[in-house]
Image 1 (tube, helix red, strand yellow):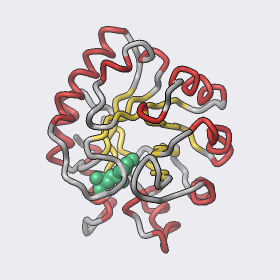
Image 2 (cartoon, protein in one colour):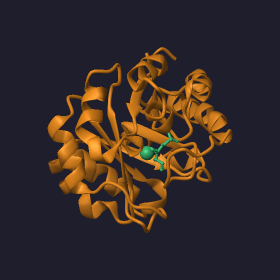
Image 3 (tube, rainbow, N blue to C red):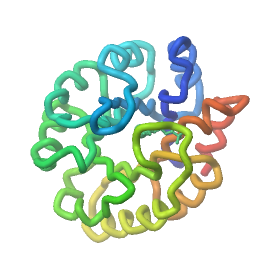
Image 4 (spheres, rainbow, N blue to C red):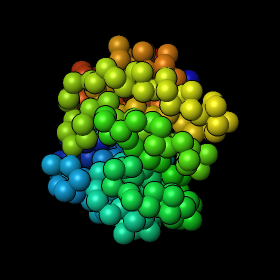
Length: 215
Ligand code: DX5
Ligand code: ZN
């Protein structure tokens, strides 16, 4: 079954505990937490104190997506804050291999995110070291954007690379996911789906998570 990681970016920040409990009691598998620095992406969001606050109440693993420059500086801090999966952007890491090893040294699962313009082929040499690859199906920085169709073909290519290399890497997709795009992504080989606005803007977020879980 598909791993579902609801994105807290679309939650009600003034009622964060309520939304965390909703996810705890839903069919969701992980919590997707988007960290932005106003430099790698043109927006700001959660920082370390918020991640810690979520970790205090969450009963499921925290899937932390770092949209920041220089993520190496904060790897230990995010481990201490409670991240289970730590995903950095390929475009922000000139020494990606070292960054991946540093994440694993803190006993977290290591993920790499690819912006829409970055081909999956750049991961050929590190795919066997990765627990997760996050394909961005929107340009990172904001929730509620339109799904970029090319993500479907990219998912197929990544699935082929993982099979070819005999890797155990999970494929996660982030941006514009709903039941329609989600179904096609799962068909193309996705293991995990992030969904923000589709979940939190729906009349019954928990039922929407359950629906995505069936894909
Ligand atoms: C965008 C974030 C996403 C965002 C997805 O930069 O990485 O996780 O919350 O939002 P939706 O599901 O609304 O596209
Ligand atoms: Zn994200």
